[in-house]
Length: 117
Image 1 (cartoon, rainbow, N blue to C red):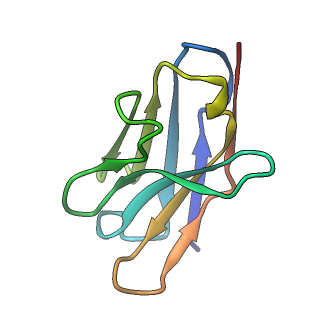
Image 2: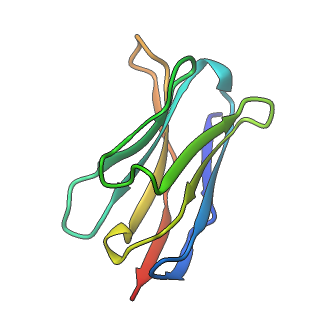
């Protein structure tokens, strides 16, 4: 059974930091492209950061220079380090695993991040 479980969300003041983790099980983690998405109330889900199975990471313009995605294939875990947080970063953050070139795609249940000024 495939599971993606996010953790590390919470409440933080503007300018603070959080580190999200996503632990994957039931998949050959190293083969999957891993992404973090977020969805704020009344807004569409948006891509935040991407760590492909091979190649360079990339980021949404809104988080460049503040967020860092990295993956530890030995631990089946992808992280999102979020610094200099802003109230507009408030959202539910979702982990996604995608097997490139196929329709195989998995989501975690999400973790809430709330940034208050």
